Length: 132
Image (cartoon, rainbow, N blue to C red; front, side):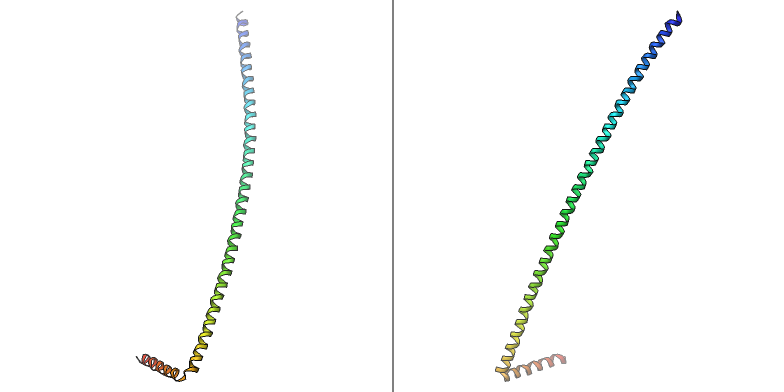
């Protein structure tokens, strides 16, 4: 009788352990499924995040390109304006030079003795300065 009493008890313990092992295996399977689901979700999020970053990078690149083109256009316009202003100043100086030459020739023509006297006085002054 003693054997029968212990044998039924060991069977119930084995059945209980088997049931608990089965429950643990089911929990492990559920955890694996949850981990796989989380992995898929993280992969999807990373993929969409990378896609978003690529889109933002393309947008920034396009903005930088547009800004560079605008800067280049403004620089070209400013350079053209400066060249035009320089040409205007040069034309003005050339006109003043021609006008001064005409006035000097007219003064020499109208007052030859005065011009000769001024030239002689200037020569004496320059000679005196150079002797020192």
